[in-house]
Image (cartoon, rainbow over all chains, first blue to last red; front, side, top):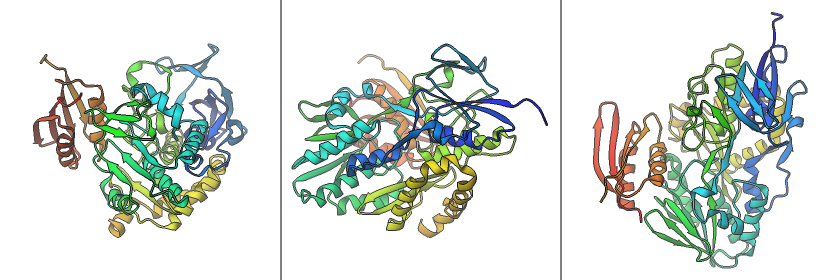
Length: 397
Length: 80
């Protein structure tokens, strides 16, 4: 059909937005990606800046990871009007669309925990910026003794294994520097157990014990007095520290939505868990960390959801399985994967060296995978098929 | 004590440990005296909410199984 091309506006040029843009056939769609800043970031690597001092670059120009026929506009989006189907840019210009995809990711909100802003200023974190991740590296390098607290604040956060990855890498760091007997590591979480999903916790909790890492569960962080070096739970329980690294509460980005009832209290966008359609709208989708769906905020989720939305836009049948496949670095060159879907709980996937190598291999292919989905999709599909939770569960439990 | 607000948390269809996350999010914004009612379908929610009550010292007014959901009614009492 020599019809008019459908206009697709994608707000956000991160992993999900860019993968989707590159998958839509150019003869059918006129695709425009909008992002307030020029870079596509490989956020998982903040962990290795923070705990290994890695100097590997973690950003590339969005333009360079998009197919040449995809339009890119560097501008913030002020308003997303789902009723009248347009996105209003910072300069007031309106982009009309036939289909909208919200891929704005998540941001951090320090204001939810009094004292958190000062804590980050002093010790850094590894869920926000390169600068803050470098601050964590300085923090652990300047510690010779005392207590390092790693605290998961209540709320949504990116990458389910990342709080404990930081804990394990910090332990390795101090052991390799022969300071392990002088530096105590405490992990505090609001969950009932160190790793929230029970089967994975059966591997993780013994490992924490083996490495002499303390943990406090049901610890709902309320506020931090950084001068006194004390964190308080909502019940007033005190956690004393010499340095504290907090996984901050994440929220949706600050964009005005019309209507605003598509947002939850944390500004995440409500959506259907199978199709990613924004609640109440057939022509608008939300993928990745921006959604309010009870799925892991991770690149794998964004990647797989982008695939489903690409197929739906082309008129095909497709639905999400809720599959996760989060690499989990437990230090000393060892790793596992958090694998689950809507129909199967997390698999007790064994810890080994190969899994960690997979994580590193994936990191090396990240931008190539975004730009050339036609080359990488078959490999990923084969991997996801071979590691379906329903197939793994009888083997590993 | 003044009459608290009633907060409903619908965590049906969310798998473990999602319901606890939703409870904690509501708890974060609640005040002593408020009542939080959680609806969940995940069977892991029952032991988790009992452990949460024991650990935090809030009050479990009711924990009942209905044909289509588990209902926990919690009175917030332990916030400082």
